[in-house]
Image (cartoon, rainbow, N blue to C red):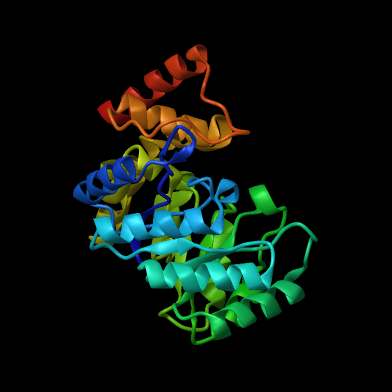
Length: 288
């Protein structure tokens, strides 16, 4: 996995997965130039999906695209994570994104052992997923470096939002083939300049063409232009991640004529005032 990845939202209709809308969304994202797709991540409301639903989402995405598919398969326990990973692989996933279990507050030693067990059993490559905003624990760069030597651990999505963390992970990675993916669009261009291989960006659901361009500019040796392009949608990224979250991403997609339905409870749609503000932020990003 390298380049710009999209943690795809999960469309719902009457509370159920809307596979038709998901297919349309995937086709639009691919046409916009993204490099890989990440169903069943945080932006895809994975904690609200059953294992069967996750498999249905992965299968739909894999059938709709020729792009690589990095499926979110992490659960709170080893056995359900392994079951989800195996079934996602059978449904067409090329790799598994495994979030750090959070409920019991495990430390790096426990998490390193857990990831090795997942990778030993997984039929597809495993990507670490460190997202302290939701799990209250960030994998240390040294632990990531140690895990990077495992033959079936292929990379990490670092959603700390810390450029320093990305730089240190790049330095500690034991193998050049280990992919470091930026999880926060606010530091995307800077992370690429620091040696990251790409990103998995919630805002890329909404402005896939803009996010893809950042990677291509950086890859082509135009870091200043990549930084400027990135800066144009930082405010939008803040709105749909830090402020409005998944309901904001879904509302912004509707504003781009890509309706994906309501978020699943307990999340609720944006109120009218917030949606009006988001519309202004979105169109400013598109016009820049």
